[in-house]
Length: 108
Image (tube, rainbow, N blue to C red; front, side, top):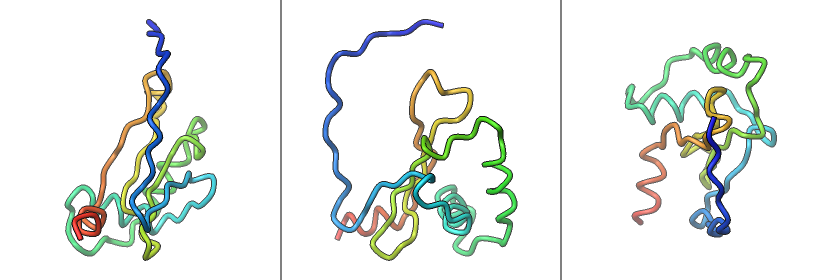
């Protein structure tokens, strides 16, 4: 593995008003995660009830709730989901998907 040094500070980025970034260690709602991923990958407007797949996704022995982040909208829904898959721990954060909800609220 090759490691590249990075010495510059990361820019201070704040979510738009009404949005907050939280880790799954702080709040972990399988239903909201499922809806975010369902709509973020354009599976349709109404998610099915398969929350078991989201629980299975987090059942890996190396899954890190503290490294998985959601952006929570002012209405309580999750607008964006991202994290560090097991094979990326040495690479960095990956944004998995974002919902149309976040785009619409940002444009207003």
